Image (cartoon, rainbow over all chains, first blue to last red; front, side):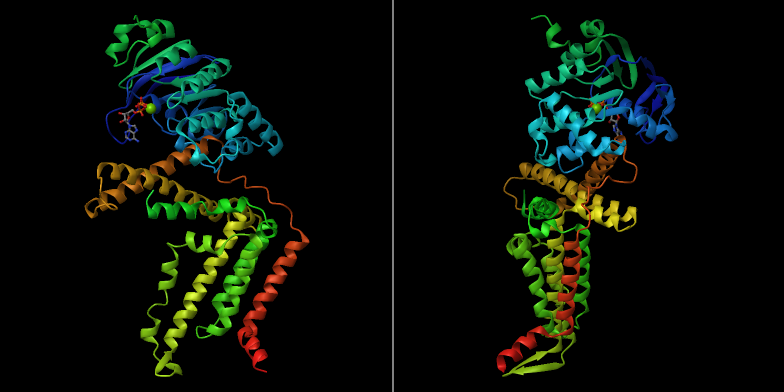
Length: 239
Length: 267
Ligand SMILES: Nc1ncnc2c1ncn2[C@@H]1O[C@H](COP(=O)(O)OP(=O)(O)OP(=O)(O)O)[C@@H](O)[C@H]1O
Ligand SMILES: [Mg+2]
């Protein structure tokens, strides 16, 4: 479904931020993308979305991510941004949620139904007509996730979905991620969440893949994690 | 929030008033737009010495304020940062144009004074009319109406995004001033030595955010046209509104109403 072959990228003639990475994610798999601050997680996502162009080839569902295919590819990708402030641009949550469905040709009635379904699924009915700029940080994050679910994408990309969330909302998001059948790529420092939601983990370090394998295995490997400025997930650390 | 931000954010949030309901809110956006444009044209067309002719033009916006339930106070309060600019336009007229037109005792009223007042009034009237339009219609409806009237898509999108951009910039400004004040307690405003970097940062940050917001739009299927709000169909009352307001404007324009009323009483 997602295929990176020897992909490199540098912001404005600096050192490469992504340095020749290759991996393949089959349809339906949940993959956690972990790594220290600045390791290149967000950059990988932006490359996949075609927001940045690097070297090498990236394919989504067999279609190369190049300018001509962007509209088609993006219709199937839902991206929850690291900063929700930058994601929501309409005045209210409802208008933001309905934006993508309308653009993809749904009638207003169908789009309305979809919005209500997603809001109920997330337990966010109260937020529907709230103004985006007046939401709390965590509410904004939940609303941003809702806007993406309203797109019904085939692939879901999440950049730090659990940051800013209280334990209850974090749990809701974790359960949600587990219940979604789509292909998922989740970048996070919340290794407990990754352990709960992903079967596989890709560990990035300075733009290279330091490890790629079953989540249980990598997240239990204390030496590997510490060598890459990470720690064992709480649920796996000895007391 | 400091004063400037507060004023700016109120300005950008002005179309939230449009969520209220009144007979004026229910008029078709295109009708209100046309009528407002007409009002502005007629107001501007008064000669620069025709102060008495211009006076009655204020009756129209006053009437609309009454009907819409929007207060005149809120208008001047929200527009307080633009108002001085509009007022300043005619400020130098009294110095250039010293032809006497009227003598009241020892005091000579010059042409320049009259034209200054006329200009100021024109500015204030137009502001009031635009405020009413925004406050009863809302930016989305307004843009939808412009599109329906076949305004170029580029311009309408630009208008909509600029309006939103003011909001983004205000938010960044608020975050930055808060961050500044927390590390410079007891200072009033921002010290002049920090102005340069402050402005630069503000521009960069709001541009970055605008860029990210734009990506977010692209990722959700936006290609250069918005699905504007649904505009209700044109009703005969909307036509009546246009015709009625046009009649009133032209009456004020071609008959000096103030003088008419004056002669009425003198007789
Ligand atoms: N717009 C940009 N211009 C230049 N360099 C950038 C830009 N954005 C990110 N970088 C650099 O690229 C590197 C990778 O950044 P990226 O945002 O992908 O990291 P990340 O793994 O998502 O980190 P975090 O966990 O902090 O979110 C960092 O060293 C960062 O400084
Ligand atoms: Mg990141």
